[in-house]
View 1 (tube, one colour):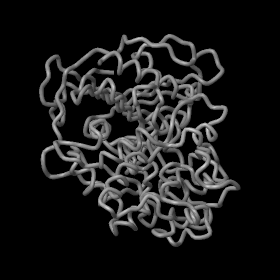
View 2 (view 1 turned 30 degrees about the vertical axis):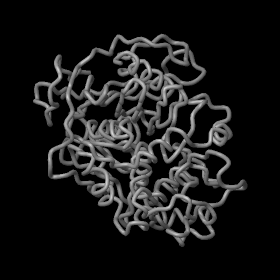
View 3 (view 1 turned 90 degrees about the vertical axis):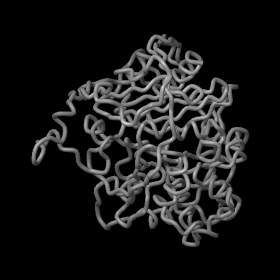
Length: 445
């Protein structure tokens, strides 16, 4: 991967000159370490490497290089698909402002030889991590200045890449803006905004329960499910081929079943909660989510590029996981949060909302919901963001297949990472990546 840094600070051009891009795009098979196994092994084994030049080439493409609704999240097709989602799934634009993007300066620092020991007991370098974690793009900011910007696997600075569940954190940030201007009450019952949810898992919970993933529901978040509730959910979002009667996201959400326990006591990670949050925001404001996100966050934040979000067959946005953004704008979201919601001298997200994310969240609910799992044992979850619990005030956004925003307020470091890991959820690799981010933050501070 090519390091797109400069030796002296200067305004970051947009886009970069062609000579500074890595356009090789050759995809290599790789694997990631699995819990309890001695070395880096995983689902990458046995999957033939395929170059970007072979994928989706021809009229029509050859069968082996055809990305479809049925295979776009599977290797090796996912690497191309994650950079070209709107060629597979319907989408809606999230427009940037017509004015100039928020400026970023550059002050390059080397990071590849930064070493760290991860929970797997292995001594890593950052360079090892980046090559073994399917990295498509990495950007590191230190006090707002870009110290590292890298692209691989054909990703370009102007290309939106899907961020999966990092979308939740963006949606939670948007919710803070709408709460701040009085249009949304986080303590109100969900049914104030979505009366159709009466009788469902959401019938007696509050918006705060939705924000903090403490809704009591029997829904199981199983990314490899091929026949249960999660599979039906994927069909409803438009992410899987339709089988049987056509479905849609909003109709699915109001069929979610109530769990046995009370709301508010156990952290239970459920992506439909965040799709419901997007619907709540639409009802609270009377504005479609893509327009709302553009007008309230993307434009005033100074995004350099349009983003887009996947939508179902009736136009409902996948606010839990369907946002596609450029690497630079993903880093801008992180920097906005590091600055406690301020950008260019303007308080965009209420400072109190960011402070609440950093200081609140039910640690006991987190522990009850994460029993037996080692990733982020001391964390809390608040308003769709994770507080890491490392003593630095670090918080982050995490998406499957290796998408991250990592913010360390103490070192003033923001890290944005876009990836195409083969496995959707690999907790061992997630632990390694979080350890790498901590090492990077210390190394460039």
